[in-house]
Image (cartoon, rainbow, N blue to C red; front, side, top):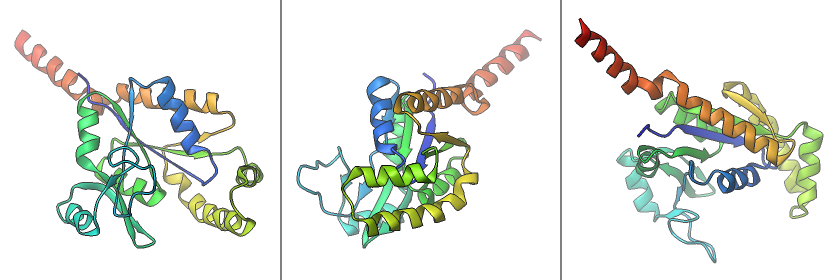
Length: 207
């Protein structure tokens, strides 16, 4: 069985990352696994350990950091968030293409540790469209929306460090573009090393 690939999805708040990931997993559930993050924050009502997050105490999380058991982590508003390496590797060894939906800071950390990882930045067609979508949610005040747009300005500085930019115009088209990009990774040399070594050995035995 070929080892699963590793893809990181980032993007502006309001770009539709959650919607696209949900649609991708619904359509290709047998091929993909979405990483579950660990966090030191308390579970909210209805949340379950191992489903929304792996819930840890602050001490447990800091122990994971000390033991190098996280692919990436960051601290937001006094709570830790990170990606457990063991869960990711288990899924990849089982042949699942692993997807991490994380912030830019974490994405760049992962790329350092896993050079074979593919980084995809999800964006709406334009910034006016981004603002329109944020307002269209109807869940946040304009001050919060303005803060998200200000943050997008900072995030845009890192877009060129990603491998691909995928425009989320319609969810269906976006899902297919991401699916094709991820599947193309299987043809990379990194994922064919066993095949290459086997061929080399066979050629040597023929001499």
